[in-house]
Length: 479
Image (tube, rainbow, N blue to C red; front, side, top):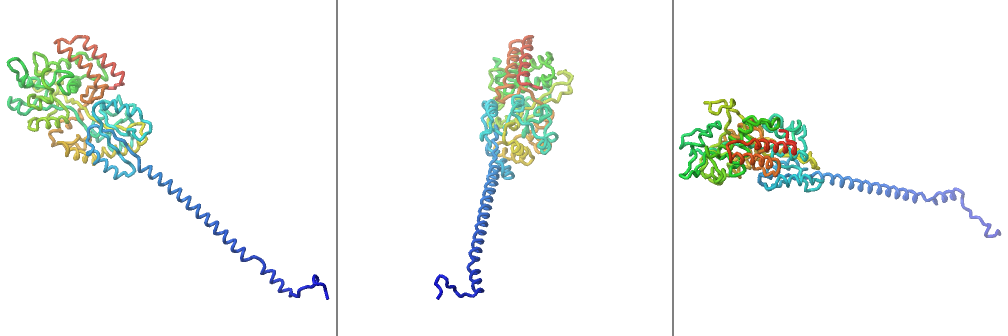
């Protein structure tokens, strides 16, 4: 018998092969492979989801940023309710832009605005759009972004807007602002006083002078009870005196931007203005109330003012019978005594306009808003909203809209001559504490000097001209 260690199992060879094959871990290998496959798929899905979430988040953040572009708009005269009406329309059409309108206070507005613009630094409170007076262009140039060519074309700034704007808002062939209103100076007259005296509404200064003298009523002591015309005094009780004087100088051929050596023309304009308060032909004096209040009281025959003075007069005396006409003119040949002389056709403009801060982060959006604000649709809707708060809205700046106001007796005298109007740095009621206020000071001194004598001292003209020259250099005045 063989030893146990040497015994062999009698197993068929083919069975032995089968057993060897069956002992290979084939099923285990397949499961392991499948498991690894699903792990890879799971990882891929997870990576895809993470990437998708990141992309969605980034896009969402970008969209949120677009939707929250905020424009800060500093206005001055318009009520919040009026502007909100227009702003709501704009925001509905431009969901990516929000406009915040802030109505400023007139006192020190220009200095506060300039200080705010100077501090622009990319903050949320930066001013993007702002209203300013047309004579402030020299003081605001460093902050004004030129109007893009595309906007000029889209709104028809060159052709459809009143001609007067080109002389004020276009500097070195670049538009610096988009106007959405217009105003100037007109002659207000008391219908009752003129009718009782059987006096026609004057067209020239000589006619006005004679009519004013006839309409002036004084008591036995020479005290004026009813004044013929509110002019003759500077920086006193004559509202808008500087506009009246500026108008007279323009009509008399004075262009300070080209030549201030026309001493005779300048002297004549100053003396003529002052003559209305002189003892010989006095129709006005310093003891009277201001011209606006006296005209409202029915005690002043002729009064000069802008269109917005209509609202003051309505508030002061709703029963006042008065009319408004264009300002008197001078004879072209200089002969004020000639019968039916050919007259000049020169008028005075003084208005507010809108600009874009050149340091704004959102200039593109700002111009988009101003393009909308100056559109016919927006202007008409704004006029309607304004007319619900007062008797009429701001005068349209577009030529193509002028006929809409043709039947408005309070507006048409201003608008009908707008294309023949121009301005200078003697605009009243701007509160600028700058070029207008400083210019008025020099002319006040000259007029006050005339009130004490009938002769214009040579040093008066010299001092005035030197003062004008100083301001021209300081503010780089180009007209």
